[in-house]
Amino acid sequence: MITVHGTSGSSLSEPGWERFRAELAAELETLADETAVADEIAVVVDVAQALGPTAVQAQKSWLSRLRPKRTEGGHPYVQFAANDETLRMEVSSNEFLAPQHQLDQGAVGILERLGWSPPNAIESPNFFIDRPLAQAPELVGIAVQTLSEVFGVTDAAALQIRRV
Image 1 (cartoon, rainbow, N blue to C red):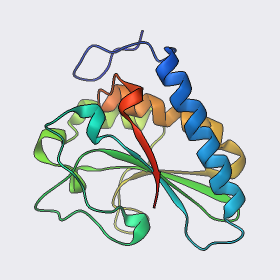
Image 2: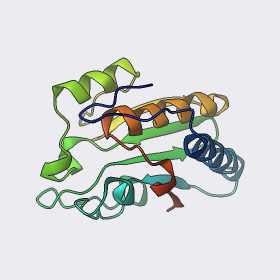
Image 3: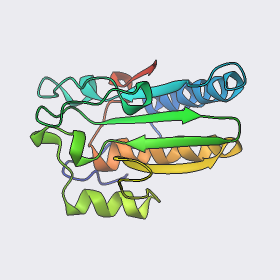
């Protein structure tokens, strides 16, 4: 049992989480295979439905060269992009989150413990992790822990995986 930041968590070994892990891993495998034929392919895990009716819909991610308006904010997301050798995973920072989804110091501490690099003006305005494509399964595990421990997602079936 994992204690979710801010709420009581559910077991990450439940069938819903196992199914989500498998679906995300399959998407990332396809993403890695397709990098040879496209300059920019991305996968976004949309958290809005999992957080319920208070979630604010965000605009497109940085991966499609559009950002949520900083004054409006949005709901949390985890996103992936790949090139020939590297897979980048990002999670929304406070710069893009609505007030009800802002990360407190406890959440930032969890992100740091999980290996996320902090946002910065040069590499990314979001928390990010860069790894070789072969380490995609490890990133899936970090994504699941982040969704559960940081954002309090307890129902993996409500998560949406989409391409942008």
